Length: 280
Image: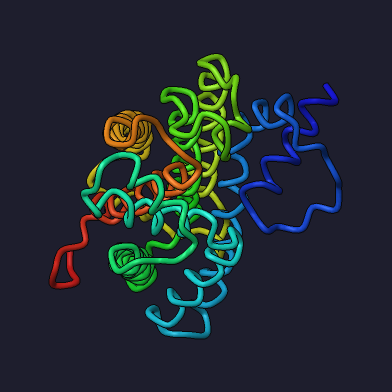
């Protein structure tokens, strides 16, 4: 039980900058168990993002409010996953041999492709936040992409080998097998259902009222489609990157997280049925 409690704390401390005044050993035994709580760490970030967005839209227009919410989301993670996205983009888009790509990713300097990909991803996230705010569709379900994107990292850790056999974050999580993935998936489903259905039944002014009536899919279908997309994209993305690099690294875990987050935010907006003219 002690190891599992330490694993929960380790997950929050490793993936976020949320203050947690408890010291735990970042050993392999603790870290490999911590993956089960990755979705919970994502859920905490999503909860704070939702609260901030709900407060900011009361005093600011949607677009600047969305920019501040995005800034908060980055601050809560310390830009950890975004840094991995930039390093991965620099390496993979260099079209160099495998060994050279890994060297480029290890370089602390950011190249042109990393900056371009980072800009596109942040621009997408900002605009998706803003659209949801602008159309009164800002509900607790905004946490779902933060939860699912953390599951994607666990799938990548368990399903693909480490590209660097003797160093890096991947080595720290050695021993994460499908038992932990199953536990993480169950955590993801339970937490996502709680945020989705619980959020739709919150009292005014905390709930985005009756948004489910305007959705293309009902909440139940949305949850099923969300889980399917999370699993399918986790597999496709991790497998594709692993084939190019001969395995995955800590940077690629962060890249997979950011790409999944953006995809799921896009999926939420598509489900809301908001067309290009601002109508439905």
